[in-house]
Image 1: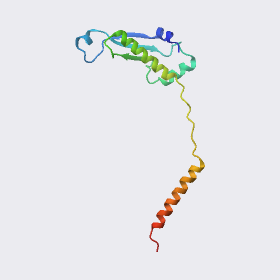
Image 2: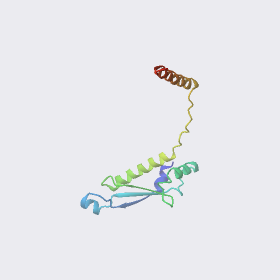
Image 3: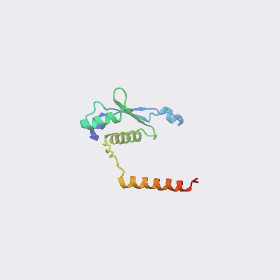
Image 4: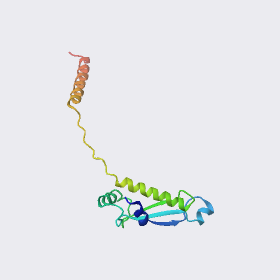
Length: 132
């Protein structure tokens, strides 16, 4: 993952953030929208690119653009830093190779013990019944 290349590929837009805040929120464009075209990116190897596209397919637009926003802070520059950190964490999570799950087999001795315990329990119950 080439972070410098990602900085060049990312587009930022500043807009006014909704919600409470009074005049400050209404007149200052502090909300940052980050857009990144995942299909035309050259910051990743082919295998990583394929992994990103498959794992983030639900978060991408039809054109293959990932959109993130941040309006946590009142400062535009800090929101820009926060959204880029979030962007890097999303990409890092998407590029991780998932560990292959190995099917676990139950040992024969454990199966035999369980069946013996069931048999003993049923015999105990059977002995309690009234016999003619």
